[in-house]
Length: 153
Length: 153
DNA sequence: GTTAGATTAATGCAATTGCATCTATCGGAG
DNA sequence: CTCCGATAGATGCAATTGCATTAATCTAAC
Image 1: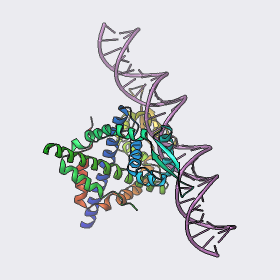
Image 2: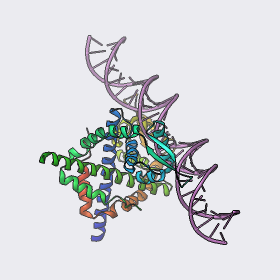
Image 3: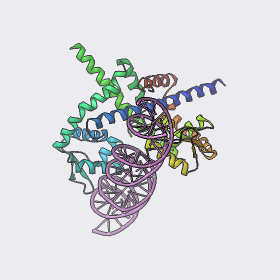
Image 4: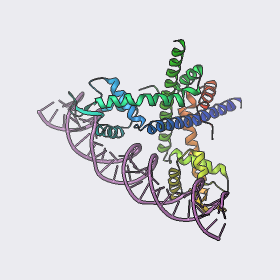
């Protein structure tokens, strides 16, 4: 009985974490997206892609690499790249050594867009996350969330 | 300078929290949805709606109440109700006392669906959340996440 | 070097979401 | 009572996402 009660308490704690994780995640995500939109900027996912590409440097990245870095479905990334390319932020280049693939490279416009987005993005994170936590709360929360993040395979 | 460094450390901590919050949120959400789908069940949002309606009891709920409870856009809820109604899990009734509105009520089928979904849902929460945390980690995480959840207006 | 199977990326089509607008009703000011 | 702004909910249309499949190329076994 003691064991059963303990398991029950544990399950309840898990459910509480789940509910708040979902709620906090949705709310903050929505708030950050709203701030970007209010500033006339494209959605977060554009930023993520531009950021990964900027990190990758001159040669760019293969789509499947971006796909993994961004935890995005293949078809989904393919279409995100369509949009980024149409907007001139990215170019698809032939991939030397693999005729199936391509290299995705950031353009100057793309680099500029990322730089333009960052202050707004940073400010949004500040408003919707940072202000609500002191240093030790933030550290604890980050550590605790890390327990839930699946290790990369 | 000390002040500036402290603010910087704080900002970094906020960004770390943000990144992990998004990642943990997305990963666990996707995993839970995948478990439901693998069991041949409808998505989480259906569960949420059915649950709120079950809590509400016989009279049901006004759409705008559900909207607030679920943090869902109006048009979005309207269409979710279309689908739930089409599937027979919900009925839209005339609203006594307000000719603009309606009462949404759960049907027996709807109640049954929620009951069917719960074990799968609970198991998913267990697999993707509970197992990764001990009791005190779970409590701390839940408390820390609560700091980010906006108080209801 | 041929061929079977795996990997990379795109795409047609359906479902969902977002946006703007619309209709109907309500509630209070005059 | 009548009018006006506010509230409840639906809906047309565009953008995005999900699913299944496809085409092209690569790799390794024969």
